[in-house]
Image (cartoon, rainbow, N blue to C red; front, top):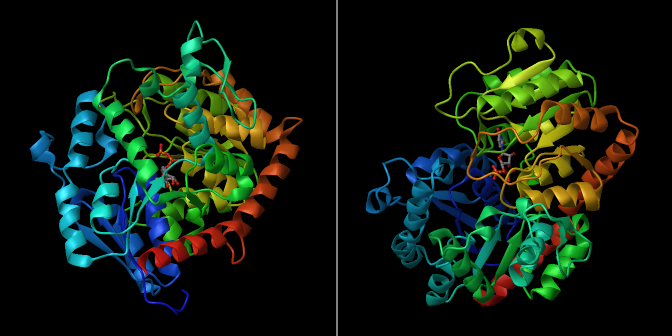
Length: 483
Ligand code: UDP
């Protein structure tokens, strides 16, 4: 931790309740604290367990970081008690109520601002009302954007130029206008909310977020300049947004304890089992398969994945999440016996950072969530891309077309919601992609590029690196705003 030469800044962090937002925002709070500032994270009781271990380990290593709890207004919007995160938003009705509840948090945050007088508030983009609230208290509001520069630019291109309205069918390819590269996409791959005609609550919310984005102090991006320089420049110039890239933020978890505790409660037995299993494998011999924190699948999709992995004849760790009310048996007959020693199936939460960094891991089959992409890049691991929804199709194009560190499994249609019930990708395609990335003609070239990029990612957060310097600049700007 750095020693303080100025008055300490006190920063409030208000993360959106979903692991994909929460985990990087905890890391950002730790980064500010590691520079000698004070970080206070605000969340609700049901979400608190995700934070407690991270806060405890950070505090015991001397960081000034704490957690404040506020009540989630479940009853006020007609949600059952305990539903306080987007992980539960599987039906449109629950999602709508959940998003309505978010705007009801304003009064409680206002009270905390009165009580604590922080110097700045960093909140997820969906808390659009924090811009005006911060202005009321004369402090800056920084937005935390989950995605990197490339998906943000792609999304802005669609919103501004509406290229998807000029094609005749969902499968007709078109170019995303006004971007540094020629990025070809179809309507099938665009986030589903873009294609909705009606003014749904979620669309209205997104509009409000964009509106307040322009009036906020600026945007924190979990990326590093060298990963997407054209898009970092484009985002700043073409859209006039003030932004700071300070990632990969997951790299602030340097101790094994921090990495294994990330996003998880409970015992470390599973972590040890997983590391023990990986320790027995040769370098670059294992494919790690994980679809993020939200996605669960029906039997038929899980069966295709199992068959594809088996047919590839490669070893794997597969984080398999099953649709909640699906019947119990879902693996092909005898699969687990046949895969004994060859495949490790994790039902639940995997220590992703630890797994990706293990030398035995040779490829990452990912759903292309931004955090996963960045974590794969940081670990220097080539990727097999299987986007499912939201900005994941954009992220796939960054990995495969621009960076050249992955191959696509061929997912071409966005799926609605978090439960994936139809197998758009067949086992043959999974087998082909795994073979291509592990032992195809191009595999070695892809691996070299991935390893080189991983080294650049790690040096970006070292003293003097691009992300380290941008965080310094951000802290200075917040400090001068205060003075
Ligand atoms: N993650 C993890 N273990 C799991 C699943 C996910 O540690 O079993 C972490 C992963 O490391 C990443 C985050 O959860 O930091 C998922 O974020 P991402 O943007 O990749 O996807 P999302 O879950 O938001 O779709």
